[in-house]
Amino acid sequence: MTSGQDPIEAAGGVLWRPAARGREFAVIHRPRYDDWTLAKGKLDPGETHAQAAVREVAEETGYDVDLGPDLGEVTYLHNARPKRVRYWGMRVTGGEFEVNSEVDDLRWLELDRARQVLTYDRDREVLDRFVAAAQPED
Image 1 (spheres, rainbow, N blue to C red):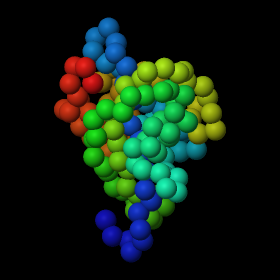
Image 2: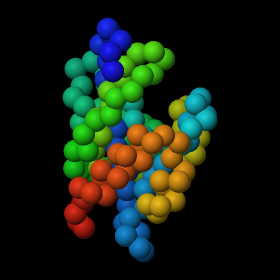
Image 3: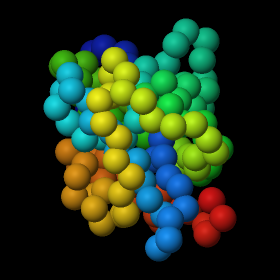
Image 4: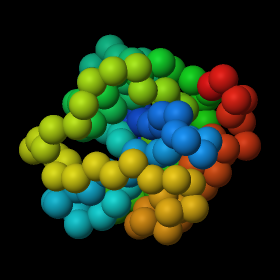
């Protein structure tokens, strides 16, 4: 991906919680884009990717998390500018979802259903990375 511009730096997470049959994953709906995606957002000045990931997930979902495995990054063009997003697995430790200015719905779904609902292949890839990297206690 070359556009001659520095990439937009962002971070986010695969938010999960234990369920009766394994894990459930959070997918969010953003009315601005009318998409279903993983929680993520841009870094603030001076912020690390990990700090931004935890902050953005909390802002968009209302959940507190334990940072889990590093899932690498994805890159894509956003409004003709490169965007690089680093992801982590994130286990919910508290909080609850409330509709906010960026997200109007959050669904907890089992893996197969989450993969179906996600709008972007890149989000399915990140979800698959989590499944491949996660240990039972993650």
